[in-house]
Amino acid sequence: MSLFTKELAIDLGTANTVVFMKGKGIVLREPTIIAVNSQKKIVAVGNEAKVMSGRAPFEINISRPIRDGVIADFDTTQLMLDYFITKAGGKRGIFRPLILIGVPCGITQVEKKAVIEAAIHAGAKQAITINEPLAAAIGAGLAIDEAIGSMIIDIGGGTTEVAVISLKGIVVVKSTRIAGNEMTDAIITYLRRQYSLLVGETTAEQIKIKIG
Image 1 (cartoon, rainbow, N blue to C red):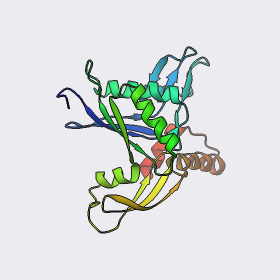
Image 2: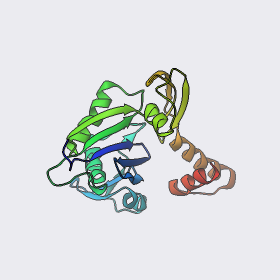
Image 3: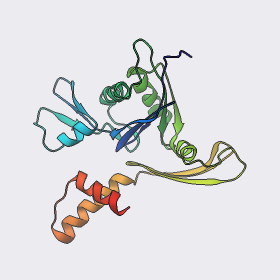
Image 4: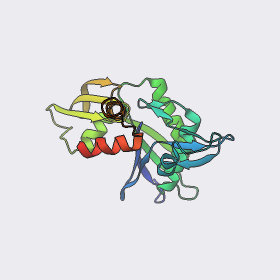
């Protein structure tokens, strides 16, 4: 491998995207959200796009292209990935990065292929996927290579997965598309019904994070 080729691991979540670079650690953590104009040109991505949410003029479309852990809009996902990879410093002249992307266990082969193709279109030299519970277990320092069962609960923005891992593999996994976003929506609904208090997604998310 070239000395100038970067190796990236990307958690392309429904709510947030995290980019890890080998040798540097986490180099980017931003909301998985993008704003494009009527010509499909990028106006803002990540934190900047989230600030614009609910305030942008009608000709600017603000969207979350990842839903329930899978790609809902291929073109905007590719644009967003390209932006994040570039911002994270993953591209260096003609040298394209090698990318590992976490995906939910419950997605289909077609959905998994779409993730890989989006990464390639975004500038990756090579892209492979890893099941998110396995990636979470490695990140948590669990002894996944031993002949013992380790349970991991991975709660994302769009999906929650509970997996038992042993000998570097997933023995059993259960997945549900009830996760962080539903918790945020529940807070918004509760405050509106109980206290006639209207709060936005950002405020509800801050409440969720603060109270744990």
